[in-house]
Amino acid sequence: MKIKSIFSDGERIPLKYTCDGEDVNPPLEFTDIPKDTKSLLLIVDDPDSPSKVWSHWVLWNIPSNTNRIKENSIPSGTNEGINDFGKRGYGGPCPHSGTHRYQFKLYALDIKLDLSKESTKTNVENAIRGHIIDKTILTGLYSK
Image (cartoon, rainbow, N blue to C red; front, side, top):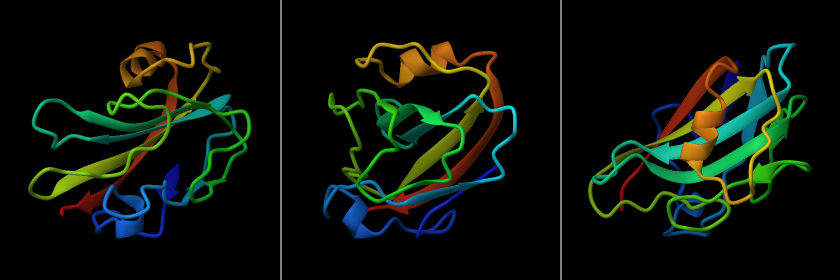
């Protein structure tokens, strides 16, 4: 399974997709999704945040036949959780200092998740234990 965007793994995320730009999600493409996948999960987080791994976007129950997420959108039928900014939806990279890594983590799951729309990354991570078929990560970099 693979995830791609307009930036390659390890490259800088374009300004448009950060808090210094339009703060919209970048387009993403998914390939080689396992045949037995029931749903996809996408978590975007910052492991370099000083206080904790900071959640920027949580999407679950992405239909298993989804091969892309368009810029500034989510696929029909997808649930969008609460990020660490306390908001539903995408919150772009916005580090206070230094260069941070932003991980776009795609999971293939053997279930659809039955979670509240107020769920956070922690709720989702607890619910997927034992249900991950495959996982892939695209890492982008950003600094002010």
